[in-house]
Image (cartoon, rainbow, N blue to C red; front, side, top):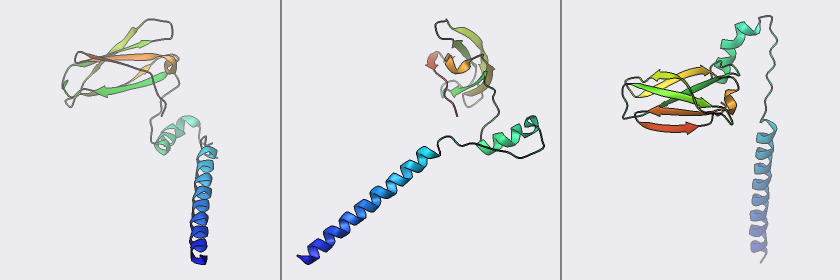
Length: 135
């Protein structure tokens, strides 16, 4: 009987430790959701943009810009037509993007308040509509 009590106590202790560890992990994730970056430098922000982009593994895109990319395996040539629509508005053509030999395209468009827009891409007879996501 004493051996059974020991094993049950051990199992309960392991489970409590696992719950505590997971609680700390979840707390840590929520706490570090919005990191703040501080720089102490004499260089201007314009000189640091490329370095900051490298640190975040991104590219500098302003608030009124949207990067549109995609592809189609069946379309190894031609171009993709990109349109945008503001809330309550109608679609307007942003431009045409050439497709590379692998069937992919990428372009940054200047769109005021682009994060609110919907974008429609037509490539190889197929049309897709998407909302932008942040990186």
